[in-house]
Image (cartoon, rainbow, N blue to C red):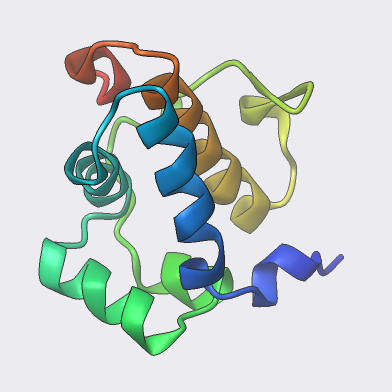
Amino acid sequence: MGYRIFTTAVADVYPHYVTKVEKKGRTVAELDEVIRWLTGFDQEALQQHLAGGTTFEDFFAAATLNAHVDLITGSVCGVKVQEVEDPLMRRIRYLDKLVDELAKGRPMDKVLRG
């Protein structure tokens, strides 16, 4: 099943992540750190994906997920991330969950499963 989010550019959603975390006193640098931790991208690669309009599908296809993603548990929009069947949707939900935790003021070492 294809979800519309799969073909959405990460750059189209990124400003919403920025707004969400900044509203709660967190920084773009912290947001980028969370995204880099999840995806394995360095800052330059992340910026290239944002500038290039990479879709979520291609973004996660190019990513090397962190070895500790299985430690990301809990619900996003009432759905437990660990129970999401579609692998791409699960990765997107991992990102949503990390952004939520950052915005809720969770310490960075906890967000990054330190």
